[in-house]
Image (cartoon, rainbow, N blue to C red):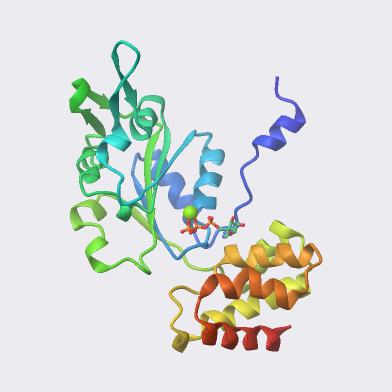
Length: 266
Ligand SMILES: Nc1ncnc2c1ncn2[C@@H]1O[C@H](COP(=O)(O)OP(=O)(O)OP(=O)(O)O)[C@@H](O)[C@H]1O
Ligand SMILES: [Mg+2]
């Protein structure tokens, strides 16, 4: 039996939309279309997927892709047991059998042979061929493939092939607008609006420093970290150093320059 508490525990994680992505995702799901999400680190991609999975009542199977990840890691493999070998489904196969969202995070990192298994799942066939077990799984209606990556620091060679990209509905995420980002900080950490607003202004300042040679701007994630340190009673300038500046760069001169911006804001 579901108690009021259980319902609360099951509530979708807080997510403040950037644009029309909630609607778009819902339509994609209802029409069995796979989704690709691009955007810088810490801008809410993973939070969005968790939110949508809960909202749509779907199990979420997440795979963090890395450069050793092969098709077998996704599909499954035979493993040697005590006195026999047994087939073990990988996360993609499990998601196809059970239904739900299979979320391949940082998909461009995965080995190229993974596209072989993704392709027949992401066109109108929606099938997963498993050569080793001689199966051809038809994806159920409630199966959805979602991939994400950060185009910012990928080298060009690592980008997705057109024949892969053109199998997805695509959404581009960016940092939230100031008022929304401030609200996220307040909701996530309980920081008061004056200081949350100051943190957002600081992030805008740091993000605009084009000549600093930073790989990426200060993410919403780092703002949330910093706000948590401030909420816990940490000195704001030191919180910004640990929660933001030191996580952005290792270069001493850049750290000093960024700390000047911090001090000018607090
Ligand atoms: N739109 C949003 N609504 C609610 N919280 C958000 C939103 N955007 C960012 N956040 C906050 O920022 C944090 C980081 O977001 P998330 O982990 O989703 O980033 P990401 O885009 O998946 O980053 P990465 O590419 O590094 O995996 C979240 O834990 C949440 O606190
Ligand atoms: Mg993520």
